Each structure stands twice: as structure tokens, then as C-alpha cells.
Image (cartoon, one colour):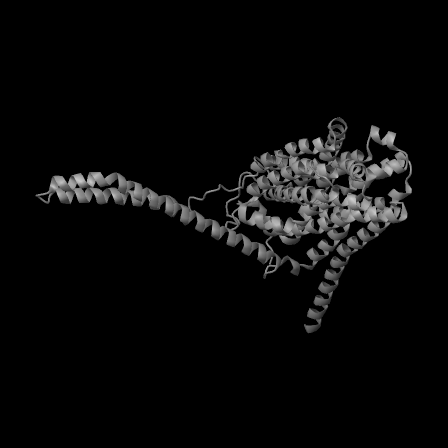
Length: 510
């Protein structure tokens, strides 16, 4: 049912009707593939990095609008959540328009969301402009960046994804410093205007995402028809004119008068045929676009609800349940740590070196190191993935017990390193469903992560409003995270039991 991940070694194109060719592409694992890594790296800086630095703006919004922590946290969580929740629908855009066009449009929408948010009169206005608009634009630029790296790499896929996603760590560190400086110097409104201008660089990153195959296929009959038909029409007009003139020349009386009439009608005839050619080209283009949209929708629908539905893969369904519980434990510290250090009277130390920056910096090394380890021939990607998850959930349980800057710094370093498993998520997803289903499948996974990110920070703020502590929110999220890990562990056990039972039944029949 699912295509083997070995297909990634062949020539792919954004056009869904050209899934692969038999000729290996020279850019696989090299050449323009590293430009894909660079492009994805900057996308992670501009999108995920800026979202992980929203704790700075969250403090500004609390002071500006004087709303509860739970309500104000919805602004950040909406932006993070919608960025990921729209993943399945962005998969439809990718199947129809391609990664390049989707990412460019996403960059424009994201920038518009930042700019409009600078004029917010209340928190509810930010829900629409920043949470929905900026989040939607971020999702349209983020998913193509992940998918394109997966299409361009085969042997060093985990390392390539690790290098590209280190942009999240760099971006968190850089954007935290940048937003703090801009808010201090110009105020949070002007800071958002400037950030909106910076976000336009997403369009540049999208422009670099060229498909592996050329945009036009000379062997495509539709392309031939589009070029050849107008040429034949012109030649037929000329030959008809020449034939008419020859016949009139041999016709005897009235020859000069008829020739003059033909010359007078020659320009209008040419203009009329040019109009017909342009009309034909427009009709062919509209027909091609209609077929492409229809094909893209059919592929998208088949991947979710059709005979090739991803939900028939039970291991993938377990992976979705894990994603539903995992991401909130990673997001909550970024949103609420700036206020937690204020409650612990650690602001002076945190201003020198913010705890979120520690997570971000170690997160960079974690992604690269885990990516290198996962690419080793004797190491299972799944084992590395699960071990990192256990380390992260343990850190979440310990974090509320730390009330000194040094203790929090150690736990934040563990969170940063173990969360490097995010670079392995596209690889794990591809191993489960195959490269041809990667866009749809990874869209589902980040959608589940988005739901987790959407509910996590407001839940932590709500728990604080009730208990005046953040401790219980970390415990509850850590417990849910552990349940998600158990879903991943149960499915292989069920598979082993079923295989053993099947072998036993086969032996009994013999």
C-alpha cells in the first residue's frame, strides 16, 4: 500500500502526476540539495525561532492589556498551534501548486499577520491577526521546507534534517535577543512591524525550493500541443493566403482587384488568428490548471480517506497519538519560563543568559548529534528517537523541583538536547509511510503537534490562575507525554504477538 522510502533516490517533481522517473537525479544527496538545507534552515529561524521567542512578547501583552495569563497565552499558542494544525490542508496546496509557490504565499501571509498585529487594540484582535493570520502563513512556509529536504536526500537524510532544523535553536536565541532589543528601544508594536519586514525573507527561502525535475517536460503531450498548435495555425494561414493568391493569379480577369482585396484583408486576418491563438492558449492553460487541481485533490483525499488511507497503518496511528501529547511539554517552558524566573526572583541572572537561550543553543547540538547517530548503519533511528523522548519527559518531571538558576539551567540543557529528536520526526514518518506519502503524513503529525501546542500554554496559564503555581501543569503534561510514548511501545509489541500467532497457526495447519 505504501511506497518504499527507497523511491527518494529518484527524480521527483512538484507536479503530482509525475511521481518519479527511473533516472536517478544528480542533485540527490548533493548539489542543490544543500541549498534546500540552507533554505529550510532559514525557514526554521524565521518561523519556529520567532515562535519560541514569543515569551518576550507575552510579557509585554500582559502589561499592555491586563488580561489573565490563561487568556493572554492563547495568542502565542494559537500562532504555534495553527502553524502545525493546518499541515494536512497545506499538503493539499503542495500536491496542487508545489512547494515553491506554497512557501512564497506563506511568507507573504505571515508578514501581513505580524504587521497587522502591531495595531492591536486588545488581546482578541491578536487572536485573529497574529494567532490565525501569522500562524497560517507560517504553516504554509514550514511544511514545504521539511518536505523538500526529504525529497533531496537519501543516504544522509537524518543529518540533513538535523542541520536544517537547527535553525529552530539559532532562531530562538537570535529572535529572543532581537525582540528584547526592539521592545526596549522601540516598543512592542514597532518591534512587530520590523519583524513583519524580516519575515518577508520567507519568500526568498521559498524561491530556492525548486523541484527536482524541470518545470516543463518536453515529452509531455500537453506541452507539445501548447507549442505546436499555434505554429500550425499560423502556417496554415500563410499557406492558405499563398494558395489563394496563386489561384487568383491564374484566374484571368479580375486578378488585380482580388489581389488588392487579399492584401487589404491580410492584417485583420492575422490579428484575428492571433486572438484565436491566445484564446486557445488560455483555454489549454485553464484546462491544465483544472486537471492539476483535480489530481492534487484526488491524491490528497486518497491519502487521508481513500483506499491508500494513512489511517490503515496502525503504527502510524500510534505515532499520531504520541504527537498529540508530546509537543505541549516542549512548548510550555518557552512561553512561561520568562515569568517563572520572575516568580523565583531570578530575573537578574536570567537577563544575563536567558534560560530559553540555553534550551535553544543546546537544542542545536542535540539535533546535529542525534542526526549523526541515527545515520550510523548499526543504530536504529527508532531507538534514538525513543531514548530522546524518555530523557525529555524525565526533564519535564524534574523541572518544577528546581528553584535555583543553576538547577533550572541544567534541566533546560537536558530539555534542549533531548528535544533534538524533532529532526528525526520526518525520517521516522517516512519509514512508516514512504516518501510519496511524506507530505500528507507529516502534515498529520504536525497537525497533532499543533493541537498539543494550541492547548498546552493556555492550560498551564489556567492551572496557575487556580493554584498560583506552574508545578502541576508540568506534572500533568509530563504524564500525558508518557502515555504518548506508551502508544509507540505498544504497537511493536502487538505486531510481534501477531507475527508469532500467525507462525503458530501456520505450523498447526502444516
